[in-house]
Length: 375
Image (cartoon, rainbow, N blue to C red):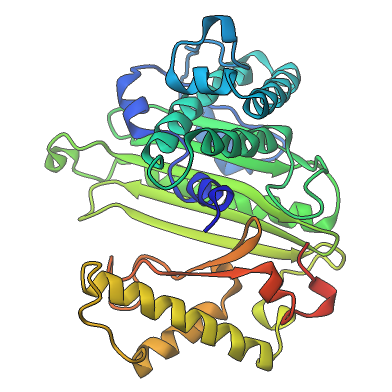
């Protein structure tokens, strides 16, 4: 898997901010959200919470003041410095567009993101060059702040804007962090996409309300709800929205899901698997994914030693793979491949596989309908 893809998947699947960063900063956050984009239910929730601002600027790096290893590495590399300069421009443009309250939340989000990026790239040093990880993560952040798609031939178009929602942990309230995206007024599919996003926002807000949870049983564990939304792909024919959600509100283990929705940007329809692939193409995709899932299951079952390799997936596993692969909500379009994530509970229950299938566009474009060639 390419470094760009690893960074992008981490940005979608992983929480929008580092939990360690959130724990170490005892601040109260602004809720930032455009009233005209969200439903009355969200507005009512926001109006019920009193919030105050606390933040420090977090724009492009001042190399004369660079202190961290990441900042020094960026300042020493021309490509990384150029990426950081573009990020600073996107940050400042968004800041000028925001209200005073929104600017405070933007600063908080940027500070948390910088810590997440630096820690994430440190963790990946054994598998990827540190500076390349920093560059890719910085470019991804600039794309998000600028309101563009992460990938696809339409990635140069500004079609929306980010927003940030923060509520600190309190009595009857889990820490709530939402880093999301809303489309500007435009085509019909954009309004449908906003409604899809708002459904997940409302769920996150509702889940963070702990009035019915006996928190005394949690023994000091941090209770949280995190939601991240991005426009992962945009071309002349397809737009794909990626949602990643995670919570821990007292259950046996953290709960998470990722879901995607693809639109035909011309007709406005929500796309399904059969719109993109005929049965012949589906069979080839299933064959490719069965091989990848089998390998991942073998490694997991044998703790990486491959001592219990099976010849094939079981009939039940192949049926499950077919069902989940044919559900386009499991497909995330990234750079330069599609990733099918089968979910935490697939192939044997929670944590038994955590499998995915990676399909490069060079392969998919031989199988996909000519109307939806991936670029």
